[in-house]
Image (cartoon, rainbow, N blue to C red; front, top):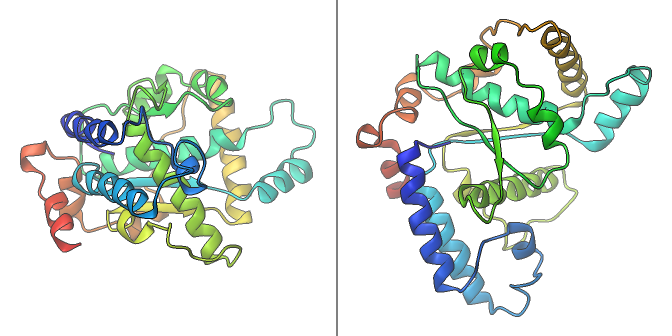
Amino acid sequence: MAHVKDWVLFEKQWRAILDTYKLPYFHMTAFANNRRPYANWKEEDRAALIGSLLDVIADFPRMRFSCSMEVDDYRLVVKVDNIGDEDIVRAYHICARKCIEHVSDLARLVKHTHKILHIFDRGNSAWPTFEAKFTQAMLDSLNILQPISQSKVDVVALQSADIIAQQSARNILIESRRATETKRIYTKRLFNKPGLLIHATRKMVKDWYKEEQFIESHRRRGMYPRRSSAAWMNTIPQMYTLIDMFAEPENHHITSLLRESQ
């Protein structure tokens, strides 16, 4: 999350780095797995590239949001509890809406009135059905603009989100001891920024699924349930930090302080 003016400066610096390495765009999964176009790069060149990109992330985006669930947990909930449902809720819909809700909850808490635009990666097959679910009642309740999808090639902010997504997933695997930490884990730098990394337990997946069905029933009637303060908000930073997260760029000072502390 960042102010639109921040994203303009972010894009300028990000593209300048890519131009230096003659890259049309940056794809974290390919980079982390030594695939083209990074397959034959020297380790020092790899370190310099990712280091430069992490510096730009340190300078501009203000908060990070990540929401995930285990595929096995999702399948268990769907098969055991909802096998007869006519409209199975997709995991993508649940996680994507949770990210939007978290931003809206924080914005409402600090009385930020400007509507926020959420941009999603066009490459996900679940996007069209997710996009179609937004009614005006939902947009008004969340105080957001109609979410849109774009290509990572065209919107470089999505390339930084790609890094967050890949590294958040990697961090979950390491913490659960399903993978070992390697030199290509950059979460210490990425997680230095304020943010939320929510990985659902099986019970949470079950609760989220029921909630999504509840919301869908309201959507079909042209309504959207009234939002209440969520329990997770007890874990957020101090109020003054949150207010700063939504400030105009000239009044935003937390980013520079974070960069100096690295």
